[in-house]
Image 1 (cartoon, helix red, strand yellow):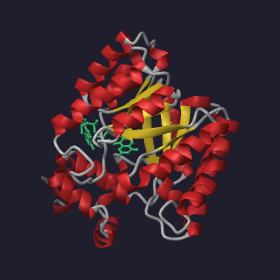
Image 2 (cartoon, rainbow, N blue to C red):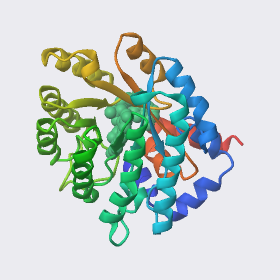
Image 3 (cartoon, helix red, strand yellow):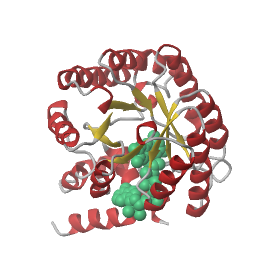
Image 4 (cartoon, rainbow, N blue to C red):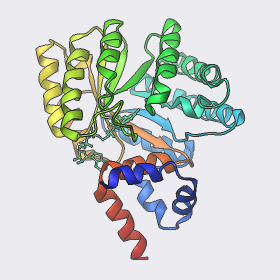
Length: 307
Ligand code: FDA
């Protein structure tokens, strides 16, 4: 029951101000968002890749209100890519972006988001890596898929995310699998109505397996975005049945969640990519992590009252 309440709070400005200003918040946030600046994050990237892991980098931020903020988001990614060039990691360090941060919800937002994300994709390609478009709430997805398709004309390695909890996703998976796209499959992290999304965990898990089967049997590159041990075992079995070698799919998990499992899968010879977020506007990202696991909230509240 707590999850939906926390997700509702993640859209509240009042809660944002309250939680962001609380002095005890930062140590809890650090578990999931290990830095505020590029200088903070470069050592983290070195550390993860030094341990045989790959990364996808997210400069946190969403729900922006001005075109200037969208330009600033673009520039933040360009700064990161400039620094990544020095590390020469190629596809071992890619980018994840939210189109809302590039202006998608503003007037003329679709065009604005495309205009801002394209230079990021171009800069990533210039250093031998790529970008994946995150999936946000369901109202934004037609625009996200259209931007993805347009970007793929010049940058076919551009990836996108699909969410197992949405009824529409099986069809999206078939289309993306047929056209050879890189696709990250996740369960879905937003508060969605029963008219568009499964609400029960067992229904979402069943949909995840159906959709993963489509991706594994298709022409594209599946990216399994989950910490769920059962789904990870099933993914390995589906890959085996589809005749895929370890280089033909990858696992992805979030920084700060099941770190031992990241290392275990990498040691077994799997491609394991860690989604690593950084930046100052961490509120929305942090609240979704709390909503996914109520124990995180208890830890957070305990640290507040013990001060
Ligand atoms: P589930 O929630 O069932 O968790 C399985 C187990 O993992 C739990 O029992 C627990 O042990 C651990 N776990 C999961 N979440 C945890 C947490 N927050 N804290 C501590 N332990 C936790 N969503 C979206 O809508 N759009 C997107 O673009 C993305 N992008 C994305 C990238 C990557 C790489 C990942 C891994 C996830 C996303 N997500 C996402 C989030 C996703 O939709 C989902 O909310 C989380 O991954 C949690 O779902 P699981 O599949 O891990 O299963």
